[in-house]
Length: 386
Image (cartoon, rainbow, N blue to C red; front, side, top):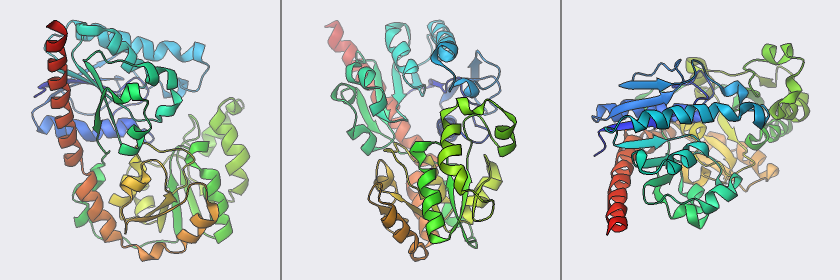
């Protein structure tokens, strides 16, 4: 069993995140369960992270997320500086059993290139594997760097070379799913909700069109680029340099009237939970193959059914009786399904979320993956030294 694990969250957001931050939320959900199981957790993050861990290492004092959409030549050094610090630290700590990496592309490649100077690595793939074809089509873990997905649908699309390094998948989880069946039912209001970063692949432009066609109230919650509120967005005269801002202004904002269709900015904590728990349904008209679906799990844990496109991980997460899925990109069918949302029982949604997506369930899956990673690395070492 891995007794000391370094979890690499990267330099982009705090753990837990202050609002948006799917990967950081997953890490924040996993760490307490690992520690309850006797794992000594070292977290590589930014210094502003507040989660309780055994050790914390950081290069940057604050989150670097605002730099992510800057030109490559301006942002390239951020993740590189973080990874240089992580590898240097690991090379001076021979007691670490395993690295659990969550930093896209650079975490995987730097740790693989470090060879036997760092411990065995489990790298969790949180994203669309089609967007790094050269990397994932040629990656070799050399018997010591292994990967896992966050859904079977995601791993089914992985190149053969990456699948050869895969130990399987572990569905995501939410603290909201813990004891969710014991949570009292909420009185539903009239609104639909879509909680996500506002960007083309999340399909907010589809949601606003469908809501307008049906005459439904729709609340959009999430940041636009680095902007958390409409005031922040309006205050920057150069905001159009961000692709997500251009998408919002061209495809979404024309539908927003402040009454039937609203953007409320980035909503967090209890306010976010109340917004979702009182919604008639959460919309997921994704225009891409969503790999993990944290917001799907959170919606079910709060007793709110899911209505979206049946692509990516959604068919795995949305069991019959917890939501309704249309054929991908079929707006008329999506609109028809929204007329049936009152068929879904919120208590059943919460019970399913508790059974499948609690932090305990996810932590158990990762502890098994850690053991498998260590066993496989040991076997490969024996083969290579014969």
